[in-house]
Image 1 (cartoon, rainbow, N blue to C red):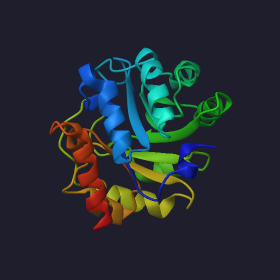
Image 2: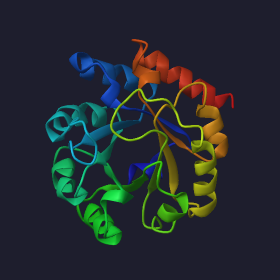
Image 3: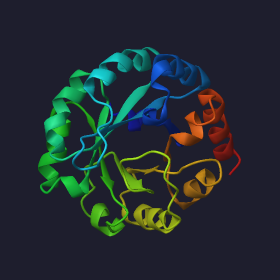
Length: 227
């Protein structure tokens, strides 16, 4: 069963790209104890996005920790030819892959290849792509990821036009497809993003930037509960 089918109505996903890699296992354990159930794992290839980020070797190291704690690893593929990465991600313990519409010219084939690998499936789209374009193609996906920054680097400022893009996306998507947002998400905007229709919130700097990931996670969950 894809993790989105058992996920809570609202999920805060710590983005491990922003973690302290010298303490990665320790920080994951602390977040699991604080209630985290979905971790966001960014894969960049140096082509679709400039940086080379994490890959299957890191994923293989952390996925047992996450799974023992009852969690899932949501892998965001910021890569060209994403289908080439599905089998290594699945073998390393990833639970889902989200690939970019802009990198998948034959969307149905790419989506089907992810399902064949036993993975949940998301479709991401960049700030330059219209929500209507991705919504028209996303009926077979578990989630759609609206980028609120340009993909590739953590710590970029949130793009305020994202609010309206999420409203439009939620109107256009089938009810069962979740809406995820990634980039500059924190305590100052997470509640408004939820009101606009997002229900999966990828948070990097707002969780890891203060040196207390569990506390950062709890603060974001609290902001959503108070919305």
